Length: 67
Image 1 (tube, helix red, strand yellow):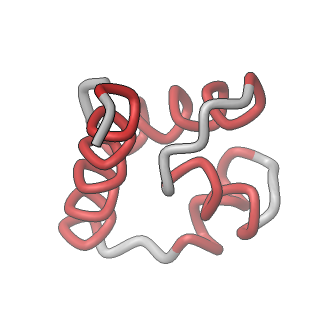
Image 2 (tube, helix red, strand yellow):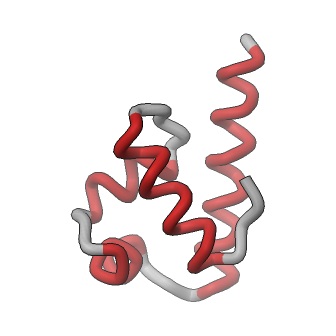
């Protein structure tokens, strides 16, 4: 596994844990930041497109996740 793949997995785990602890649904988070649940899912999966990174930053702020 490459360093980028490992970092992606780390981001994914942080978000999954934070979402479970917060009690939010991905649909609710998507509404909060003005995007679609599918886009939230891709961002949480650790995708690294500029749009996904922007969404990750917004979610991190809401969920208190350090990236």
